[in-house]
Amino acid sequence: MQSNLEPHIQHIDVSQYLKSLWVIPVMLLFAQSVIRLTDNPLITHIPAWLFFFNPLIFLAIFAASAFWAHHPIQEALRSNTHQSLEQAMAVLPMRALKSFALAGLIAVVFILGVIFLSSLVLDNDFTPRMMTALIFSVGFGLGVLIPTTAIALTMAWMAKARKKLSLQNLFIGDLEHFHTYPWLIRSANRPWLIFGVTSLLPVSILALFSWLMLGTNDDAEQHFILMQAIVLFANLIFGGMALVWITSRTIHRITRELAMGLNFLRQGKFDGHVAIMIDDEMGELARGLNTALAGLKERDSLKDSLAIASDIQKGLMPKGEPNIPHYAIAGFQQSCHAVGGDYYDYITRHDGSIWLIIADVAGKGYPAALTVANLQAMLHALANGENISLLDAASYINQSLHQSLQGGRFVTLFMAELNHQNHTLQWINAGHIPPLLWHKDSITHLEATSPPLGMLEHINLHVETSKLGVNDTLFACTDGITEARDAAKEMFGDKNVEAWFQLRHALDPAVLPSSMLACLDEKGFHTRDDDITMLCLKRSSDDQ
Image (tube, rainbow, N blue to C red; front, side, top):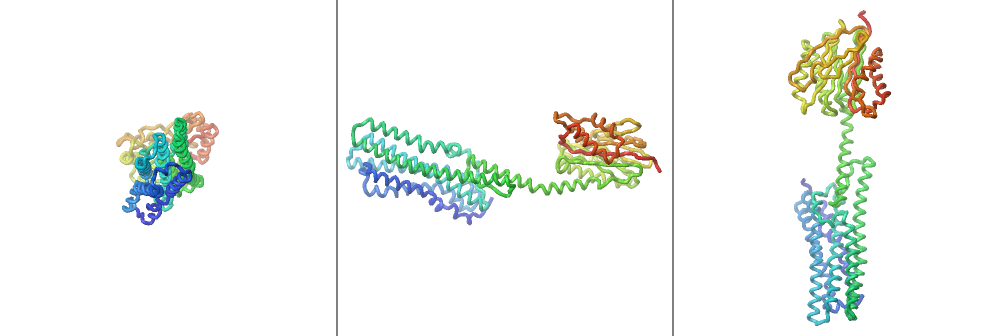
């Protein structure tokens, strides 16, 4: 991804990085002052001019290391691309670890070499015990404490820089590099690093100093070792406080950013984002928050689309019941989601007959809703054809669905043609739940005579005919009713539907759907994981 980085250079250039390392020269001057104030015998082994100039030498060493650590960022600024900057930020902690560790080693070797050569030239009485104490004292201060503080300052600068870049819509945070980080950079292990630098290592060195002092009666040796212990202790107090302060501020800055992300979630401000300030476990959490915010924003933006889709699907359903002489008719549809796969319709044909349709598309949501829209369009187009029979329409729909449906999906369909003049009902049942027909004081099941539509290109469809008498009632539904479940996960089932219809068949079709829903609720079948659709028809009187 290309991005112009020119407006952001002032936040991340090397001068800003060097300024963030201001604690390092302060620590060096403090250590030099402690050595001077304690009248440490160490200064007797260093030329006066070098004693005053060695802080500058150390600063040069650590400054060179800082330039090397920051070099990938400088290259990213020259390439002027967001991707290169992201990669440079990701590898910065590792480069800082290597460069400052090497700088500390060089500084230790330099000062020990100068002292050792000075003792040889000046022929000073520099004993092995004194040299051991000196190595551990200088090694801890220059080789451990200052490099560790420099790494902590680098991490703090990187977190602050990433926050500033994030505020300007530059998202920096590549967690692919997280798993390649050494264990001590990870946030979960960082307390152990602080413990080792500020407690375990210096206490062990002080114990070694005690052992060295107890092993000699030479006043010069004891005095020298004691002075090294004082220098180490002073550096530990000052450097330890600086290290803890830097680390705590960095953690506070990162956790405050994470807390802000949680506030975005709580307040519903899904446009917000969290700066990925570090590539460790906390960075992984920040990226997770951003993913959640983006997902919720997308979901929130889909609400209007879902409402529109729901309105469109409702528009596919009948706007009202047709006026059929001597018949009452009613339909009901309830989706478990914004859009669903159930469909019912009544379509008046050119000869005055009525097509009655109830269908259930396998699946839920948008795919099923699209199939419903396709099915509705085909049925209305076919109904306008003068020479299209019920069988012709069902055969055409089956072939069309077989070509368009994927993944083994299908449509169950009950389709009937009502001739209100001779009171005949011709019907086709393609794999649908058998509608119930109250006829001559008994219930007839209009059983399926063919498989669901869309599964096979060619199926044998059969048209059946039923004669409707006065007070005969037809009740058709989808499996959202039969598969409704109670608290014990038991389904309502076909037998309960039949038992209810046995008692309620005499009701007006307009109230049958509400009666069925009330029955479900009374019997405890509250769990409805599917769309519910009902179609009811009743012959009310003879011809007049």
